[in-house]
Length: 128
Length: 361
Image 1 (cartoon, one colour):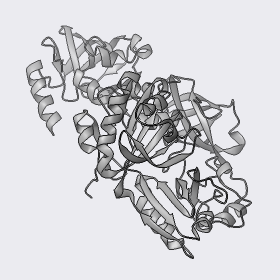
Image 2 (cartoon, helix red, strand yellow):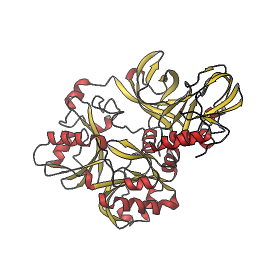
Image 3 (cartoon, helix red, strand yellow):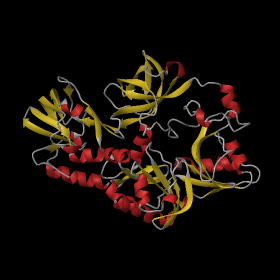
């Protein structure tokens, strides 16, 4: 299981990569994709949609089930990774490159964890 | 309630199976390979499934066939030894108690395979309606069951047994055969839509058989498969699953299983109700998603803004490469080629009514 140091993480297993204070890329973690299994569909928001920290902004579907993806930040959708819609398996293969959206005008964030804290969180979560 | 384990529980854990509850059992939903690869292995090479959770029941005695013909909608009058025949089992209202497979062992001995989740209900129902000289026994705990499914299945089996121990016709089984040194029942049946076998193995020998099959199948691409792939495979092959396409309130005629309901038999439980109801107002159809999205069970189906029914099962089908579902719709709107809309969690996804099965070997 991979936990890149430069990313921040949520308790609902999303990652966020800030490019500056107001802008960030968002995706789901290696742990999330492993738990979900083979992903076959993603329902993405549109450019300009509002994002609210802790609230669902997209959903992903594995062969078996659907899961919400929550936004780690409050802001606006600046860019959408439309490639994911055509190749949802990228979320399984390279979860930290398979970004869902780029957020801008970020005005707030969830209580985010660094890589070390998230790895610890996953360990306890996985054990439960 | 404490979950039951099959004789292969330890093998699943060692293989990294992700264990979930199903039909009262702890079963592997998938292995680390994942549902898609497991599904594709069955279509292009071979997959191995633990289906030991299924129930096995024996029926013996001079009045066995009379009882089968009264309990079940299919006709069991003419059967060869070893032959298998599928049937729904109806209640008095024409709803479905379960769907099952009956094998004729020989003479007046029969071997019945029922769904795990319905085992107790089925045995109680059958015992309650039994008449004359016929004895029914639940022997589920004595048997493990392994399904070897896919185009390479026969080749793998040939490495482990003599050709005369391999049934050549579908829906036929051979009793008491030696496969890899283990006595078992070899049946050419399955629930995937691909060629394959189901082996009924004494419980205490099931793990030995599982390991021997995996060993002999390695070069043919055989991998263990979980219930996730079992479900996507049966859906791609448009096979009904009890609790979805069939239930206490869904008749086999609504489910499109009229071929297995012999209305010309003198009598069977549910016949008068089915006769009185006539042609059911709804029928089971196949849907393929045209728009983007994954169709799932219990989603409303609309035609020109009017609700015409609901999906009963739906998923992404890896081999045909799109999302497909089965649905029970108003018969008058259920024509092949009709475009409908499915309410996928508030988003309308376009789908087309297409012929079933979605996949045919």
